[in-house]
Length: 43
Image (cartoon, rainbow, N blue to C red; front, side, top):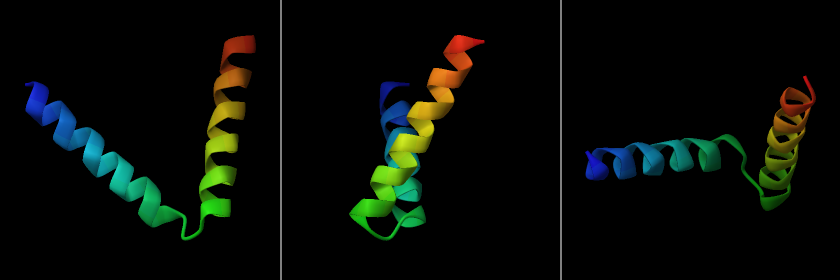
């Protein structure tokens, strides 16, 4: 179970990194995710 979760997390990280080609893109994606969480918490 723990190993499957680790593999799933690794796959998600790989897809995230493949989605943005630069560190600036990674920063923007992370910032957008933070804003989404913040907006969800306000509701």
